[in-house]
Length: 404
Length: 230
Image 1: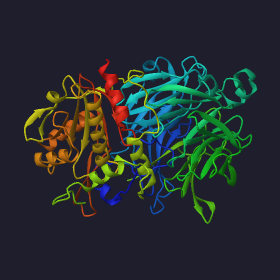
Image 2: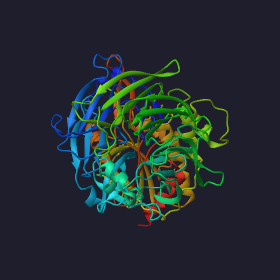
Image 3: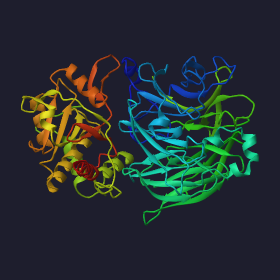
Image 4: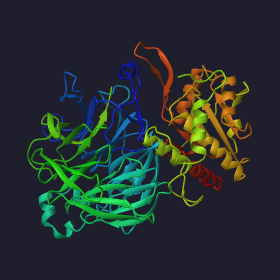
């Protein structure tokens, strides 16, 4: 990935500077800049009775040299609750787009004018209409001049879904349906060196908005989950191959090093860490490389040198670290109990720091605390550095890194 | 930092050209990932989808601007691009970022050759606009054009006559650019920018945007053909 060296003090002199640090799992089209991240933007679920109850973009100070390290320094609420879930920068890092899985609204925050204080500048309320019935905008993945968005569902609540594209200034470009034999959607990630795009699969709105206790007892509904990863020709946006990966393969992470022609995913319902690799004939294959267990692994993150995969599990609130130096065989090398449940996990660009959050979905979260935790590698151990209590603002979900 | 002078005006461009022209396995050390990007531009590890087998939806429409060309004449961009498929890039000649302007210009030189080979030179045009209104004088642009073997009929270079015009151009395309300052607040001579190259159809509508890693001449040629089939 491209790494630019920044003079942060110089940048502070300028009015309109994009953010400058990054986790490892972003788009290759997003400029990645070396440096200590100053902020973590946490797209946060609103909770009735907690403050104004609205979803919000919360800024946590992540710079250890700062007096407010580990503290919430800003909160930008949006009107109402929308099932705040994922968010991503535009290719120039001037905006952070954040989606609501319930209302399908998309909130565009300016993070360039004052990186500590994201400001809501636009709301796209026409996602369902624009896309011909897609709902649940999930991954926001920057492409040059545009945003690629994977949706989770369609308006009738089943999982048949697709991808959507908007220009950076919020104009709808097109919708692309998932192939009939792999209708579900979740994440989307591109490998530009190979012109390949991967999409994964979860469940429709009927499932993801349903209280989890009820859902687990409904055998028919439990069959309505994705079991595939689709390999696409990225430039043509055409599906090439469907890989059967049962049990809802969620987050996708391409290896970052040159000539590492593979990606990883994990399956929520079957607890597998899965390698997706290019074969000699140019086709793709999937292989289970570690049994994570029946703990509902949800988010994964890749070390910048492709040596490790971090896995957060919702079921047991544990962060597990797998050595994937040999990508065909994942070895569990470390684990840390984070809390009752855990969801997102993000690695810093230099692989030294790690951040995790607690919340999964409003109707699936267990009773308990919500937080963001910072950890760092010290002497071969992952050491807790801070815990940010989200009790006063809502439930912490996806993290994006920013800098002054 | 030097952007030329004396007898060795474009060491980086020449280095890049030399690096990429022949054997991909040449012994060069620098950042492996950067090498991978550069290699990927000129010898992609994939077969680009054939022209017309995919869609390039309209992303927006750009305005026309009167800029100064490398001969010092005031010319409207529409006069150059009208009726042709245009590949419009933004650079500044002092840029030394390996994955920035030098890579873009090397890729465009290859594209120029490909367009000629495919006999598309009557239907397509390359337009490179500088965002250094002060230093990229017509003389400087002409020198840069020669360094990249630009055919004046096929590849034009322009600069805005004023910072205000430049801002309007950049806004129209959605191209970012920020001057870089040192710790004492002095301009370093460099600009921070996302490398972006825009594909315009005959009506001046943006049909694709390329950035580092995907400015692959083989892909752009197919995109030009795809748009020409409209």
